Amino acid sequence: MRFCTMEATPTERKGLTGKARTLASKAGNLVAAAASAVSGVGPIGNHNPQRLTSGKTTDYEHYMRVPELLQLQKPEEARVHHDELMFQVVHQSFELWCKLVLFELKAVGELVAQDRLVEAYPLLARCTATVRLNTDALHILETMTPWDFHVIRAALGQGSGAESPGFRQIQQKAPLLWPAVEALLKRRKTTLLDVYTRPASQPDLLRLLENMTDFDMFFQVWRLNHLAMVKRVIGRDVKSLKGYAIHALEKDVQDTLWPALWQVRNAITDKAGTSPP
Ligand code: HEM
Image (cartoon, rainbow, N blue to C red; front, side, top):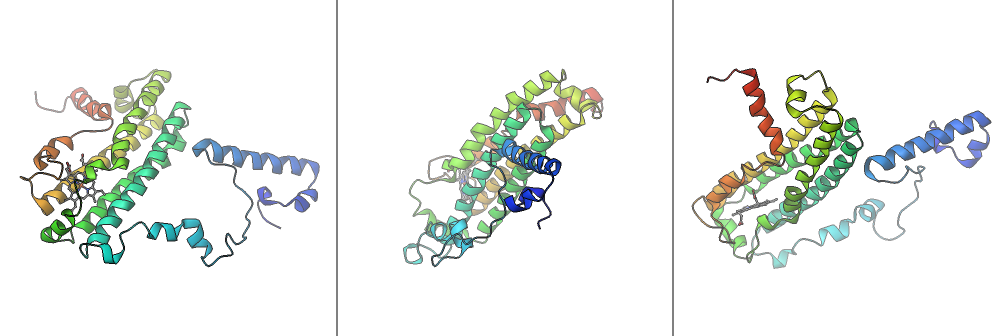
């Protein structure tokens, strides 16, 4: 007998009294509803430990699509340099993580529109953890010498990380979350400054805004770290393969995803009156 009524088999359900059966079915519906409303996934199914494949691959390899994944890097004989595998792995995993961030940010927008802030917190925290992980991943590139990089660079055509579809989509789609936040402020009849200067008044809203600030800040930290790494590898006073001056990136990295979250800090400091005139 399983512990959770969700998992009761039809025979086990038969053994339940009418009332217990209704409760069990209600619990099942609740779990299914919760699962589908957060992120659009279907109901949680019964545990069914059947083999996924009878072929040569393990279920892990089958489910994770490991063979296909490992086909996506240049084979050893085609590589121009020893460090090329590392270079491709860091960039390819970055695209995967961007895919996750975009998926979660979309869900956050939907949750905010439905006033379900508490459910949005872990998704935003997940996005932030992902960006931080990718900032750490940049250090792996620092194990490559500048001279060795040029062997790889010569094989990149005009390719640049600036063309990263995942990064560009985060830059385009994340700001679209802001109108949902503005609508929420309106529904609550409050303002950003009010939420921040009366922290106990709307703690759930404040927490949402701070979680968003975390993401925005660490997205910027990724850009700053990337820039530092680029300068270390190819220098500041040179041009990218696209002809872009590296020092111009210093200005680009000042951009934020949700500028209002940063402007309000100035207003808070002004209101506090702690700065000299
Ligand atoms: C040796 C390593 C790297 C070098 C020398 C390098 C170089 C550059 C350069 C020169 C740019 C300026 C834009 C342009 O090309 O026109 C750039 C932008 C960019 N690169 Fe890299 N990159 C490196 C690694 C990476 C990695 C590992 C990623 C992602 C995982 C990445 C993603 C990006 C992105 C997203 C931009 C746009 C940055 C922004 O607007 O702040 N790059 N990179």
